[in-house]
Image (cartoon, rainbow, N blue to C red):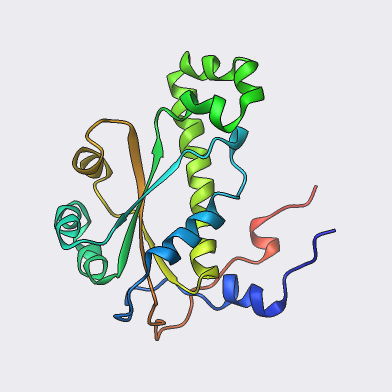
Length: 198
């Protein structure tokens, strides 16, 4: 039986981290980014499809391309982050069924998605969004802070970074060793406010 995580670990993953807008100058190594991915990929997705695709933006050239595609309020803090992760999903994820789930491919599920564009794209986005939650938790597990942002021209990002049309972006995440905000954390809903047990 799997044991519950320690209070210290739960604090590191959920209770202590804040969404940050400022980072220290400490760089994030490629090894750390690899470790984050190796944790992220272990989370469940539909049929083990793993449609999430992450583009880590670090170079000055790539940052310059990304900056005008961000909402004005997100530009400065994003350019100051050590790493920017553009989260997207593979629009042709179903074509790789033989790689990620051979049994499902043998049952013809790849063909089912090929014939239903809306289902294919919605399933890809759903599992990629789910995997993004794993990504954020993995980054925290590796000692990083995160700043997820939806304020961007995602169609523009797709044209700029994925001109082949094989990826659709949906979120930008600033990554680094964060400076904790000085203001109080905004409230979270309690169980009784947001759930029902029936």
